[in-house]
Image (cartoon, rainbow, N blue to C red; front, side, top):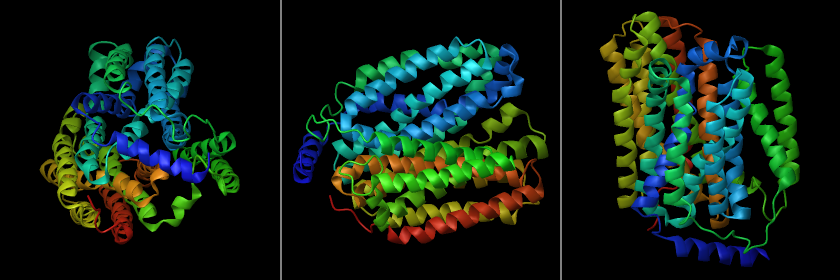
Length: 460
């Protein structure tokens, strides 16, 4: 099928799906997104118990790193695979894989086995995360996506705070196996509520053309890039991953140029609005993960709070993040103003980061809670923007793949933030707080500058 036919089929698919995301389907998609986002954080606080139970202290970080690597990879590839095979098929496979691998994780007898199953779980989780946002791109007109994407973005904030608390409580009070087993019935419910209603046809009208070489090169590039920051403390591993990332990126560009259906359309990087969306997602997630990663250590190591109390102290940040995401979606639907929302988000996040920098030597539990709550509001307002900017700035046939790439850059922002916090502040201190949030200020300023290329207003 020629390009014109593909474009026509894509328009038909989008038009037929407009308004089709009803409440039951939305609930199912949000449930799937929540458990996928939860599983990227829930294991962290449970790993001491898990490693003791399985006797694998030497490979303590493997299950967490395995999930991070595979989920980041599948998020990037999900758009291209859905373009070729149809979102319904891909999402159904993701749900089944996520549920099955969760059950396997619960039955793991060694840390190495758990890491292998977590790698499979991450593939399914990445598909679920990207698929929720791709559904909006192919089934709803742009202005109607605001409230939906606001609710979806809020799931990340809830998962970032609930995950560590839930993981630690369940591992100590019940059994660490429950952390994984709970995913199975939730995934089954999400399967019933969602897969029947997602778009069945692929945009190639039944002609399956899968970009195998491009997918492989993209996977190598993503895994090596993620590994670069995950292994930043080991100089040799850092250099090796960086070299592999650069080489695979060059190969990817060479493979994808001129293809009709590339898994990573290089033309997206020539669209300023799309690139600004990628940058926005990176910067917002960087700021969020700075708080999520570093502030619990401040509470515990500097202020002497218990681990459970330090997690609870971030609840106001989560509540305002949820509120901000939903407010942002509603305002976008009513006004269509995208650039203004992005600018307001960056200014709020910048203000909170500056507050941490100015008050680094006089921080108290109350001031940290207040500053982080403001940060949560700003992050929440900005969270839907990266996907909206990428989707509306790209051609219709590339909207799904642009969404996957926006998800990838947002995840990369969190990965880089976690690595930076670990390198600059191995232990919480006044100097560490000042340094970490100075870096956050610089990153957020770059996002604010980049927002000038986001579309000013999106028509109904």
